[in-house]
Structures are given as structure tokens and as C-alpha cells.
Image (tube, rainbow, N blue to C red; front, side, top):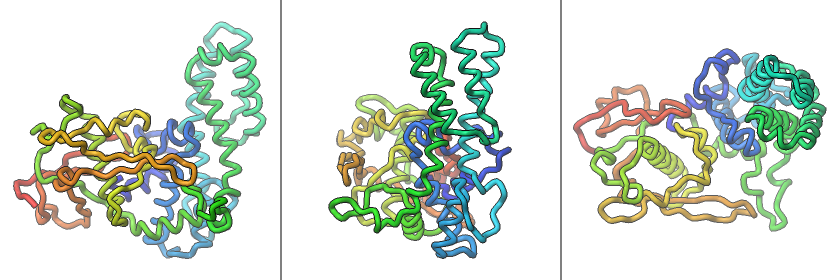
Length: 364
């Protein structure tokens, strides 16, 4: 995200703010359905805050304990943390994904004609307490057996029972993550002697946080109106509002990655992009190859599929005739009128389109 400070705030919302928020950063499709995708970015963002904006600094032992506390693991953190920070991830999953589905099912069952299917489903989900104080493995086992027994009805009933099952499974799996995260990066090498690609460990999180530096708020600045002048097309068609937002955000992601790397191709985590986009779109449906420069017909995105230690990954670079129109400008609190540029796009938050906030006549 362009607004990294706002992103940190998304990972530390109070329970009431979670309930009141319309667009939350961590989504069911990524966090629950895709095995905690987005968690590494969240932990790295938290670590950056504590390293560069608090007295904790680079105290690696204390940083590990703070990250454990946020995940809901046993922690010996000495730093004074807000009460809702402790176990935040666990409570977020409960309040955002599990409790609403459980409540919906129980309400629907209450006015539906009683059947064996609904009676058994009610008996299981009534064991799920809103505060998370229930035997997750026991409920998970019961739900899996229930699904196997009533497979056709389970599939046809609605989205809620499958989502309850997936969320309870995630909560049960979360209990085991601390052992994995605590492994030394250097103690879990692959058979070729390499560090496992994308292995989430506290070591890796802290190293990435130190490399990324202080949390910042940026503007994506463009030197002219590129969309209305039809300088970019999707195949032979004009772009939709969602197309424009996706291209702008992918441009911003590319420029942000290039800040810390001289490589022309940058590795992208499309699931993190899903958490930022204004429209629900699966990564496999991203169609970067269709976006072309209208004059030359060349692709804006040069996409490469690579295999990194057995994991498929996507790398891409942007055409220089596209990137030459853009730059990142940090919001330092100065008067923006003193900064060069014509169109300033600000980050309105997760699931919101980039917002055109300032427009000037000057060019770069």
C-alpha cells in the first residue's frame, strides 16, 4: 500500500473498529482460504513500526515476543501493549469471519423447518463461543465428520457452513504456527542448502522489516492524464474503473519494490494485491498481458513465471514508456503545492480505489 502508516493501523484496530469497518485489510479469500496469505506482510509492517517508531528498536528478542503477542501466542513481551493488541489476529478471525457466519446460521435455523441436517449443524456450531474459548480441534473434527455425512446438503445449503469449517480449521492451525515461526532461518535450509522461499519465521520478518525501513505515506504522482487520452488499452477496449485502479496499484507496487532493489523484474505476491484491490478478484484472474500501450501496441507488463525452491512465483517489470510518467512522492507534511507533479493519487485504504487528491498544471 502507498499508505504504510494506514496499513499498520489496519492491523491494530480495536474490536469496535473491526466491527464498524466496512473494508478491512485481511480478507477471507486470502487469510483463510489461502493458508494465512497476507500474514507475512502484516507481521513485517508491525515489526517496522516497533523498530523505527518506538524505543524497542532492533531488539530482536523483544520484537519476537511482540509479534507472538499479536498472533495470540504465549509471550514474554516487556513492552506495554494495548490490551486489544494481545491476540489481535485470533480475535480478528473470530469477529470478522467466524462469529458473523455462526450467528447467521443460528438465526436461519431458528425459523427454518427442523431437519436432521439443521439439527446436527446447530448442535455443532452452538459449541462455538463468540470469545473463542472453545475446543477448536473438537469442533473441527465434528464439522469434518458432519460434512462427510451430509456432503450434498452441506454444499447446497449456502456459503456459511463451508466458511465456518474453513475458519475453525484456520484457528486450529494458528495454534501450531508459533513453532514454525520460531525456527531459525538458518536452521531450516532446503536440501540444496538454501533458505526456503517464503518461509515465514521471526528471523525473516525482522530482517525484511529492517531492510524496508520506516513506515511511510506516499503519493503516486503522474505527469499527465493517461487514461482519458486512451494511451493504454485492454486489448482493443477502453479500461474500466477497476482496470485503472488495478494498473495504478500495480504500478505503485512496482515502484515501491524498486526503492530497495536495482532489479528490473520484481517479485510480486498477488494475494497481497488482492487485499488492496477495490474489487474481489482472484490472482489467477489477473490479466496483465492484455494491457497495452495504444501507440506501439506493446505490453505494459512483462510477466515471468518462475520457480523458486519448488514454489511458483510471478515476477514482472513495467514498460519504460509507462513508468516514465510516474514517480513516488513521500508525504512529509510539507505543502504539496511546493512539489512538482500534475496528478497526485492517494491511498484511500484497503478495498478502496486510489483517490485523485491533487491536480496541478506543472509538469515534472
